[in-house]
Image (cartoon, rainbow, N blue to C red; front, side):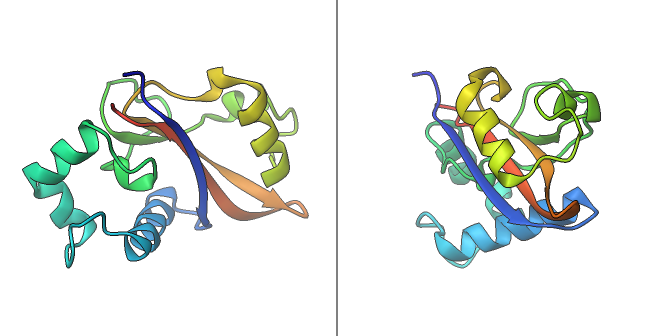
Length: 140
């Protein structure tokens, strides 16, 4: 299997780790994937959840355990924010709108990370941060 690409947006927070947890909480509230009554932290402590994610996953922000720094390069189910120069490679002003981000993802599959990984970046509306764009590839 080669993994499935996915993308979604979540609420903005200047602290990307906080925004990521909020996006995970919202996603888990929509679909707990049969792991009822567990928090994100409890899910990642479960061997059953880890196996579920690493053999198929949810194709959402639930597939990553935590955020890491933009320069983090180790393999793992992590959500990595793009560095400013990575954003400027497809959005020269460095302030992508949702529309520009979606177009970049549709036009350039190279923007997707390796399997079992995710990326994120701040998205802007009217020049102001409005939401976070998340995208990745499942582990399967």
